[in-house]
Length: 239
Image (cartoon, rainbow, N blue to C red; front, side):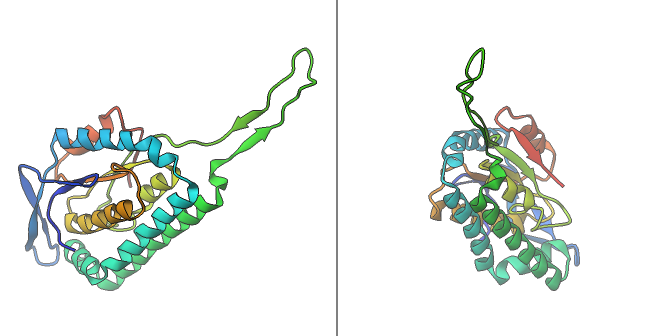
């Protein structure tokens, strides 16, 4: 799988006008390719696309949502050495550490898939009707947790996999029925790009709506500030 340096807005690749490169912390060498900085328009497009996907995504059957999470996990494993080697180069962490974190990330996704299949997270409660209640009868009362809407996730610097593009925040949001817009951490953009492409392939393979997942690149604060302030974003996850 090739790394293009483009942001992923739904199923589209969007190249930024200016760019930055990752740095190998072990050697100080710059790594290819150049990653384009997402523009304010890119942020708006990603957030609006996520909002458009929200109703369709949250209304998918729980089994379909769980299978989507399992498919993301499978796609991460399919990346194999390409993911491990790029992550080692961008993080300076040893291979065994990265392999363990990859396995943790996969386990998190599979755990959330099982939680979704179980359905208990919905917290469904039904209080029976009281037709004989005086002075007026009472209909039954129903309570259920519902998805909030699009969620922005910020990748962590020290956990390039388990708390990043497909990490716990993303897995939790997708499990709950919320589309996700991720801002990749600039220290490991190549790792983020590979994981983002794996998620996008899972979106396509599982027939999830376009906009269920997007990934934006920036080495400054502009994209993050725009995401947090965007009216379509209903929650933010970060470490």
